[in-house]
Amino acid sequence: MPASLLSALRLLIAGTAFVVNTIAHTVPLLVAAMFKLLLPVKAWRLALGRLLVALAERWIAVNSILIARLTPTRIVVRGDGVDAVAPNTSYLVLCNHQSWVDIPVLQHVLNRRAPLLRFFLKRQLIWVPLLGLAWWALDFPFMRRHSREAIARKPELALADVEATRRACRRFRDTPVAVMNFVEGTRFTVAKQQAQASPYRHLLRPKAGGVAQVFSAMGDLLSGVLDVTIIYPQGSPSVIDLFAGRVQTIEVDLRLRAIPSWLSDGDEDAQTNDALRDWLNSLWGEKDMLIDRRLTGDANASN
Image: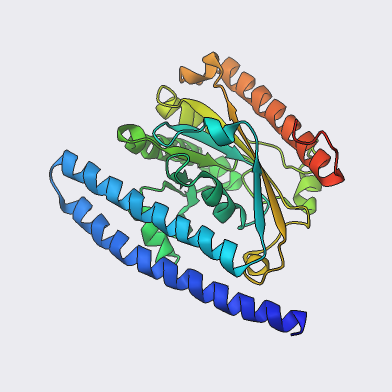
């Protein structure tokens, strides 16, 4: 069979399977969410919240099975965090961002190892069919993400973003959570790297604002930082590339980082914010060197 025809067939089969799996898990999830919204007793709402998480974890598990069975993709996971992470402990998850494929990869690696990942999402994504409502039901925080120009015209918009982040994080205080933050703010491209004069070969500059707000709202509940590095040896793929079987290997490095004492107390003064930026830049420097070693085949890349 010609390679192009095989890719098209894989894309059709895998894409259909993912859609069916999403519908099969999203419909009962939304029904449970409606009951949770209407119940007056907090203990009942918490119980239904656990049911929602179980449905989401099963959806992710089936997606991982579909990737394993319907595509040639191998996801190779390394790092000290693989055995150290716990499902009943809250974490902040930091990861580089290159593709929409990052999300199913992260979910595959952390599903049932850590609490259910909650991403900060753009407000517009709530309108994505089925998935938008599912994210809302699972308490994913939706942010308006105002532009710098809009904030310059109306500085109060920045305060609204901060309060929205804090409000979202407060909802996570009753249950273990893994709060996911793509601190680069957007997917990596060479054009973006050059536009911001990034000092890293494979990464954009990390932004400290969202991390500071998470620690301000729930720093006392977080037990560590899960530092995740995703590497695509064949180049950054699209979701279509994944479903069509054009992605052979994805490498993931998972490390558990201790939270600096000056960060866990939730202070947001200028000195703490400067230290946070330095800390993130240091993490990103290590991440950049790790990616470089893996892509060049360095035998010590796992160190």
